[in-house]
Length: 163
Image: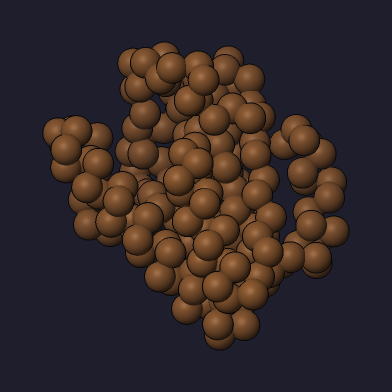
């Protein structure tokens, strides 16, 4: 599905699911679509918001070990919050890259324990569009975090999650 297809079907997708998980690299449009689901009554869980709440604009400059720890902490926060919200009967959209199989499996496990089958939406976005979007970022908040060109190009193609 392209992003345009997703916009057309947003009502249909929202109506049929309790948990929607956005998947894709930074700049692929996850947050944009997640906000559309919020407008349909979903609560948004964002790894970027969780990390921003602790590190703010200092995050990009942190050493790799601290960043790794932050990502693990954010994943744990999402998992526990997701379980709690599902049990309360809420509909949830998870806004996080979800590029690693282990993260998608963890979300599936949480949902399974709560009796819910999640929908994973993989956003396929051309590299030129990613670069254009990321170049506009200023680091002004959790949804505007800076991603360097080195980070964009430094990721191995098979792990880039442009699905």
